[in-house]
Image (cartoon, rainbow, N blue to C red):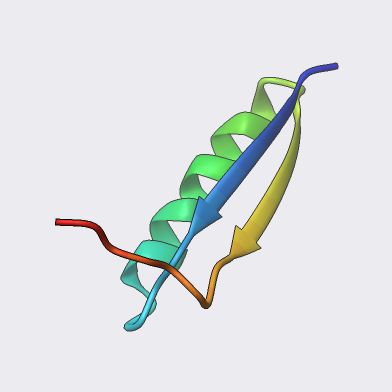
Length: 45
């Protein structure tokens, strides 16, 4: 079984919703998924 990490940051909930859809697709393929919400994200320009 493959393991997949779905990491995301969401302020409004839209990205969280998309991450849940992705995680569901991963679950359907039989892989184990881990959803992680990240609070401390650094943006580089």
